[in-house]
Each structure stands twice: as C-alpha cells, then as structure tokens.
Length: 278
Image (cartoon, rainbow, N blue to C red; front, side, top):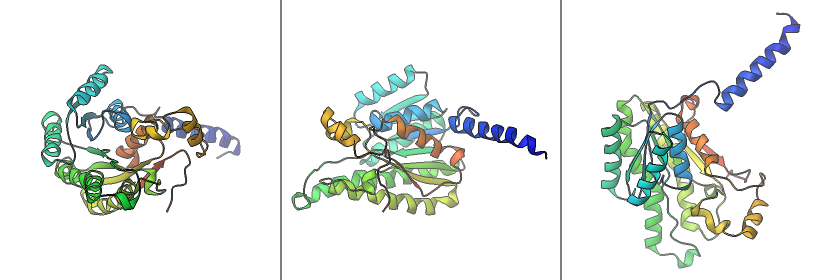
C-alpha cells in the first residue's frame, strides 16, 4: 500500500464511524421488535417509548391512569408511530399479566422490556420513616422490575432472546440527602441488573441498566422548580445544563439494538458528568 493513500483511507474510515454514530448508515434498528415500557406516559418513560417506536419497534406504553395512557397513545399515534397502551400498576400481578398478554395478542411476542416505574413516597430522616414506606418503595422500585422480568422472559425465549433495560438513578451511586429508601432501592437495581444478566445470558437475553442524573421531569421538579434552584443545580454539573428526557432515550434504544449485542450487566450513567462510581 502506498503511503500517499493513507490520508484518504483515514478520512474514509472516520466518515464511516461518524455516520454509524449518527445513525446515518442504518434506519429502524429496532424494526418489528415488540417493546413494553412501564410508566411511559410522561417524562423519561415517554421519551423512551417515542424513541423505540421511531426506531421501528411496536411499543406498548403503560401507566396507572387510563387518561394518561389515552393521551400518550394519541400523541404518539398522531406522529405515525406504532404505539398502543394499557393501564398497568406494576405492583399488581393482574396488571403485569395484562400488559404482557396485550403485547402478545397484538404483536405475537415480546423482545424488549424497559422497567421505568418508580416511586419516592418519603423525604426526611431515617428515624421518621415507617415500615410502610420501606415496603412501598421496595415493592415498586425493586420487586416489581424483577417480577416484570419473570413475566416477559418466557415470551422472549419464544422469540430467541431479548433485551431488558432497568431504569435506576444517579442516586444509586451518589445518594441524595433525605431520599433514603429511594437511594437504597436504586442501588439495589444495580445488583438486580448484574444478577439477572448472569442468569439470563444463556437464554440470549441481555440485561442492562440506565442511571439518569438530574433530568428535567415532573418527578424531579423540586430540584428545578424555580430559576434560582435550577441555576444552582447547573453549577454542580460538568455539562452546565439539566438533562432532558430525550438524553436518556437514545441510550436505551442503543442498548436494545444489535449494536449492543455484546453488552450485558452494565449500567450507563446519563448525568451530565456527575461523579458516578462507587
């Protein structure tokens, strides 16, 4: 090979990498995949549902309230996306079963599960926290993702495999004062991800975790509800802005795609540079 040809080859190689990174080389990386997304009528869950559908998946959204489901479905269908929905309280077995059954009935199976539902029913001191608060937090934030996984795995096996993404939080690495049960539950999800990844790998099911930092949603509004608070929060981030739900959505789509076929048991932090390792 002549040395004179190397610069041209380098430029060509760089252009290929750039195009692959931007999604220019392939459309619909999730074409004909079937995805369930819990708590997906607002915020991060809604952005994830939209992105999965934009990337070709048939998406079933869910929420505890029918009116929220109806509104989300109408919005996404209005964008020409393949989206349906149903009420699902992830803490109720009958609701989890209905969500799975709906996806199977409409689309013949399940390829992707994004467990996004979470609660934070308490702010304050450990000394003031009741057993009921612990039960509710761990039931919804930790037990429900495990039981949702149990419900979808048989359907994924019928399809030859699948992908799970569990939504944790930056609080799993850097606990927020006053959010004790929430912090603990999100740290537990890191362990759940690794444990499930080991168990499900022989079934060709990958399990990964998303850990959002400060994302501008109604769930986090206490941190940015006024401009002064928002500016203070920005100063704590290396990237001087609050995250948007869409900042999380593309990462989840990637983790569910064949581009991530050699990734399992990992946690991706989307936190604007917030320190995030134990």
